[in-house]
Length: 115
Image (cartoon, rainbow, N blue to C red):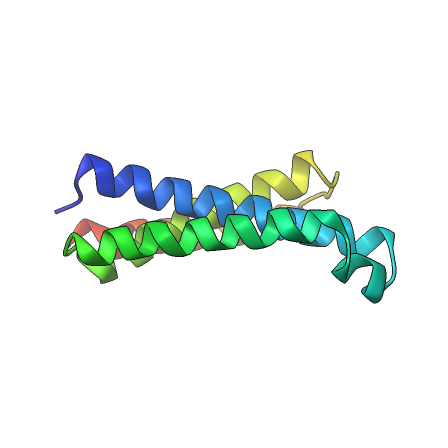
């Protein structure tokens, strides 16, 4: 069973990873590999990943059902990354890509429904 604190931890974890991934893309697009690696943004990215690891440990220590949490994490993460791509990077989705996203999210939700 998904607890409120577990759900918040999973959503926060997905949000932190999505923001860190977006920052990596933003940093990598604007500079060379060496300057991106030495960028101050990389420290923030590493901190975000570290906090996400702590949230995963929190779920594990509190005996969360890891399969359930992993599926919910994937749903949150995929939604957040699509939204970040559209709003932060001005990416466009085709109709077929939109259908694919809806089908993938529907499949993840059906896996968690227990039917």
